[in-house]
Length: 167
Image 1 (cartoon, rainbow, N blue to C red):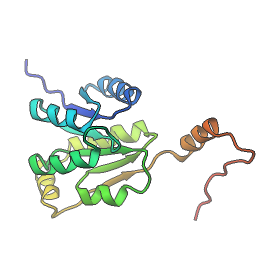
Image 2: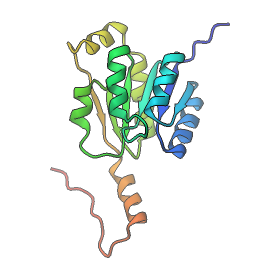
Image 3: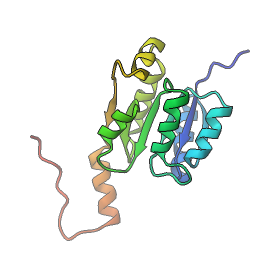
Image 4: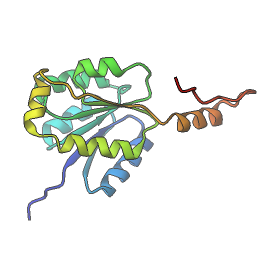
């Protein structure tokens, strides 16, 4: 029987993140490929069928932006979700042609929904986006509560880290 599973390429230099994402995505019935840097990602993209790529920015050998630039020339229709801990990357990710930007730490349910949305997007819409005639960029910020807890654990302070006020 023909394999109908979708293939996702995870590109992140942090092995625990790759392993955790592999486990989650495999559990959702995706075939998962992994690369530790942009050059490995390019080699996988040349040799394997990939339906979507999760891409970190701070990579050795070839960084995430270099990988996006290469991909725009060879397969601009491939959905790309940038996953990063870098601040203020939203506008650049949109301009570079990424389909979504997700801040780390990742909100896994929202990541899975974003993947499903992009995988189910009609090819015509992908083609329009690739030609820059349409934009459906998605920004998924991290869960601030998770980030505040992580910061408290790593950097204890003598004062509380208050939640942001609604404006």
